[in-house]
Image: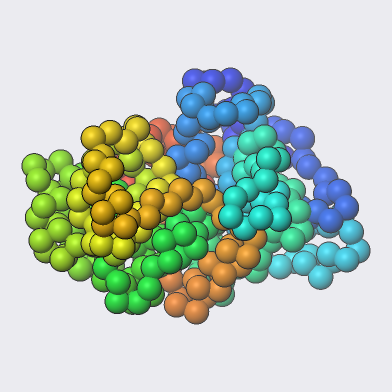
Length: 332
């Protein structure tokens, strides 16, 4: 089969022949139609991820047709178009992942290929209202945002919610999910265009974090926040605390801007703020997330589509951080 393969740190994705996988018992093989990139794939390429192995086929997101099964119990899946839950071996405790937890695409070969093999219990039928490329963009970012917003921060209808860094996959899904749930959603971004796009989707407003005192103007406009979903961390985390209402919840799923600093502890304990770490999600949360996408007819935003043989170009585009929505690879 053809695949985009990484052979070492700081080397390009190479489009090449690779051994076609065969499903073991309780696994299925999927002939992929589309895959989608996440920042995880870029960090692996740069060596900024734990547990690196090479050669590796990255990719956590995919949509395709089941073409082979490893057990007669799964034959009913053959010919069905599915998407993949990339959260492998979550474990028995809903609060946190097990020690052997991994994400599809490292150390197990992922979706930047014509075929992928995954456990049968981790596939779900493609939402019927979505195109294949839209469905392929959901899994990792959709699951991460769903758990952060609902599973951890427990966002409710009519609450005021801030999504930081809108435009990236997780943040954009979080904004779409919160809007669909009836929350009053505001966003931040370093791009005025991305803020304008989010407002067109239903956000009430937003602020450019490159502007001085952006958090003060946003707090005044919104009245403060019940829930904040943040993937940046860094120096601005203290500003998020300042924007919180008493009893607010901050769900933190990433630290692209680095460690927190200058946070005043008294502001956290006096306002009774909950700071909640969140990574990926459980099998049930993935199922619930797909149900939410179906019931609210949510359509993911696809920023750009590349061919599988253009995987390196797609990764370079993602690394620039200019996209609004998901970057997708057409496999067929």
